Image (cartoon, rainbow, N blue to C red):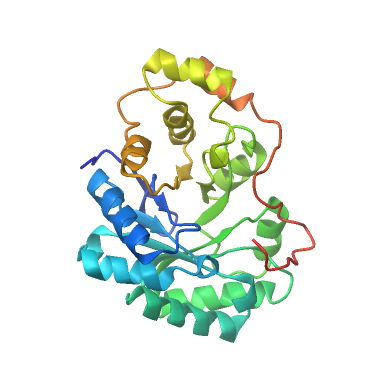
Length: 280
């Protein structure tokens, strides 16, 4: 087991592993169970799901079947657009907990900012935290304007902002804003869904360290102070993605990777008008 994964102290006093395991688009029960087992054995303790992924029940079945100690796990789920609103959010999260077979999640996020019930949904997360159904609350895909708007009425602010981030979208202004407001930035699609792994610069740096391009990118996230959740269903790749704690990128290498930024997204862009269709 790799026990070198750093724990980040969140603004609410909770600890969260800096590197986690993403479960996006994995729905087959046997695949989820084996992936979680591979990840746990490799050293992962944070597992990230969402209502939108339609696999919370399968994740719950896997956790139960594998008999993993609850106190060892950091479980994240997210409220989908269709479940936003005070009553809807509370009901949907209780349903998520039933599917996950858990009494609480460690982190509950609003998946995307939408104008409808913007504040009511956040109020529901605050209430769910008071009830002990989640330890921490945060948001996903929020831009600075969303966070600033939320701050006008929120009783407590998010401790996490999970956003798309990779070398072609390094999100430096948002990272700086989050840091200044005690919000930990967490990267989804930290490898750009694989679209950046053939980049010559990344492969040159990888060769210098006897690592893969993916390991270099994950190390870049690590040294940037960003949390990140790579995803794979293959045991060898899962092990490789967490084997990033025995080398260090130089300042020059970090700058060079930052300079790959060209504002290219692999996911949809969070629009300032908030409303989204439910295709994802």
